[in-house]
Length: 213
Image 1: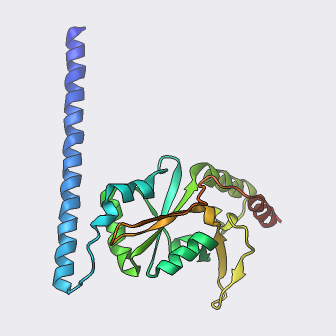
Image 2 (image 1 turned 30 degrees about the vertical axis):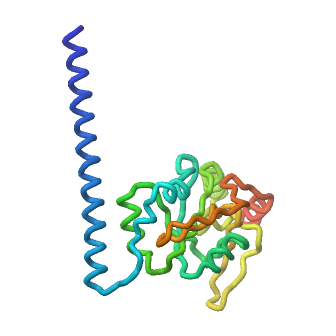
Image 3 (image 1 turned 180 degrees about the horizontal axis):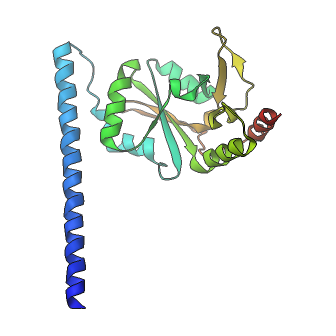
């Protein structure tokens, strides 16, 4: 019995050491990516503020506070006024939600890669947060109804879809799903007082019923 326990302890110790090495490697990769980004910017002549503020503890906590129970999406914009308007009016998107917003997690390496591909769209990052429970419910309902070419984001609107100048269908995600926005250069945080990632509306089921017809 003692030999068995010793073997178990030894295996656990080896596994813990393996995980520790993996974490160290990820940290090294992340630091290397930061250095490469800084070097690229210096050689390219960019004179913009560095992006470290995005990874400040308070900024990361704000963005991913509900990551264990909700999906997080980020949208970059140049003007503060545009970000403020999204807080008030909701997030408008044409056809596909993912054309201008992307899913994000607190994985620092993954976030840095995505950030580097989007950062020149603007200094302001709008944080969108929607409950996993709501997403699952409407995804299941869409699947059960056999509705084609529809995503849950198209259901979560209280305004009738409209056409833009390009004849694309424009949807508006309610402002309650906007957690707020940040300025990644300064680290400033602008929370939305109306934020509610569990927000539901009778209009959501009405939208679903219309698509079933």
